[in-house]
Length: 372
Figure: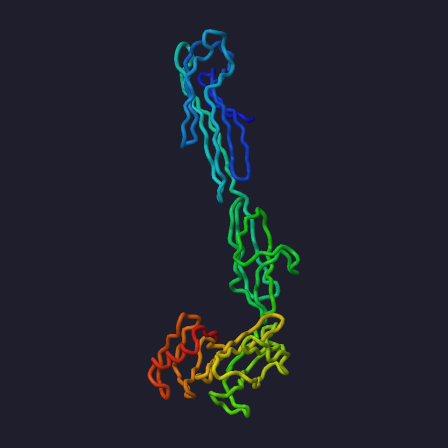
């Protein structure tokens, strides 16, 4: 416990304030007890004193007191008590607490004595989160958090590494520490350094120019042919950002039954095959699967008895198709995928009759759920 004393009145008495200060991570608490103090052992009796404590914002009035009453004189007498609690913030600040005591009456030397104490409230503890590109290029500025606060970690914007993809942070450069996702919340009250986590960039295998249509046994395209001709361009995937590519594995299914399964001979090329026999009266589904250990690419084409061919336009335009009606290709045909019906706008209906006839023909074939 510490003390602060006010100015002495006529060498006889003064105010005093005893106090204790306790500090936690988030607050500073000051407990103050204040009152009258006899400085020369004078036998005070029946003198009225009143006082208050204030920190400039809140004033707490103590009760009036007759010092000594009708008994013998006193040394100290408590007038007022108050506890103040101040929150620690991101900046330090000071508070001044004052006890003012006024006494009158009888032969006492009247006057006012003030005891003042200054309290410093320190800022909350500050922690630093620093970032290391860990083999990449670019720099991310340090972040700071204060005790009890939560911050959002960097998402890695500005970092890059050739043939690698940024996937988050780790507390150790070799990745053996604690993982943190990019943009994760961090609330631990501790400083730390985060190291970028990198993964070799993976590129999926690709399929382009996929075609499936009916042919005769000799390979001649014919809408009444019972064999199905399948061709597509392919390119294997890469696990190092495109420096090298992997021979893909291919599975070709017709009506969900595998017709071909195996590793393709090259990392890039054209695959052509003919399969049969399939009824000209039914719609058939041709699925092309291209995959490796990291991912896959799928194309699904439908063949109807009146439609040949159905032709995807490549990976960059996965949701577009060419449709041929009665053997005549029609460009500019938009088909709603996975819709309840097929909606289209035609640039031309050459060789196919009115738009309504095309719509009806496709509905008849059950073309209500195209997957490209």
